[in-house]
Image (cartoon, rainbow, N blue to C red; front, side, top):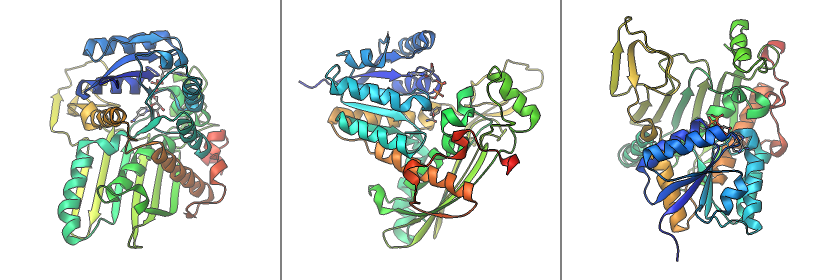
Length: 416
Ligand SMILES: NC(=O)c1ccc[n+]([C@@H]2O[C@H](COP(=O)([O-])OP(=O)(O)OC[C@H]3O[C@@H](n4cnc5c(N)ncnc54)[C@H](O)[C@@H]3O)[C@@H](O)[C@H]2O)c1
């Protein structure tokens, strides 16, 4: 008999795992029963968080294979760094193929791969192991995005025509761990790290409700990248210190600013546009996610820092630096926005509910590895465009094996 409650194992017990764990208070019929992290302390901290929220009674496993083999575990969530993606997925697939573990599904955090080859390998391995696959793009599950899409399409688009322009931005003051800053480890700079969100949520908004992804065909991509802040000597020094001297933004920077313009053709053959901008040099209150959707007689806008809750602390309140008001918080005094329930508002609860419901029903999630691969294809085309300084038709020749200069550690805008 099929189990009614899924046992979930999380691979990687860091920053994003904590978001998923916190989101679990809103997920039914699944418990977090395992964590694997090569850093034992991290694994134990994640287990303690699960227990404190009463969302499972997890065990800290010694390896991916051991966790996959435990009969209590039915699905795995990949939340490890980008540079471990394919080795983690190879291990999962091997465990299933060799009959060591029985799993229903696997989900993977963004990006699916550091380049097209890796992302395609992830999809192939999931198929080979006959696993249902979910791509963890939380923003297409954010309540403001899904509710906004429903309303705009039901009212504005139904009466005046479909939207023609989606603008999305994801900006903050820079990642929390040194590996994100290294092009070779992460796969790029901010374009790879954060434009993946903007590209996918903008595409989602322009797609009619319930329609498959291929009703929109990418036609061309035009992009620009630069390192506006972090290559300045005083900021490069901060990165060097944070990484024990490893990160060298004077000689091996990654882009901290990127924009892209993607032209799609819709079913009627009309060109519609996605415009994205993203940066690691936005010093506002904290993480700012913004989205606009424009159509003939309507507009939608979202800005996560326009929060309903705001607090004010005078200059007499000299508290410690923290991230208790908003993700990537930059200040503790003055008038500060608070995102009251980040796990809900950024989409993690609806995302994990969807993945769990899909796995329980035995159906492929609506956001899956094919979507993750498509996002990677668009991002790599954006790197090609930025590299060439011109608009690139999609799909460009050589996309399958393309590695951006920033991911090879050879990109330096000051030496152009
Ligand atoms: N959806 C989002 O908005 C979002 C936000 C942050 C991070 N992410 C993604 O989540 C992933 C993890 O990022 P993070 O911020 O949690 O990083 P992190 O560095 O905070 O945590 C990663 C954890 O993985 C562990 N780890 C290292 N190698 C591993 C391996 N081989 N197997 C299992 N665990 C391993 C590390 O010890 C660490 O505890 C990245 O791919 C990142 O792009 C997504």
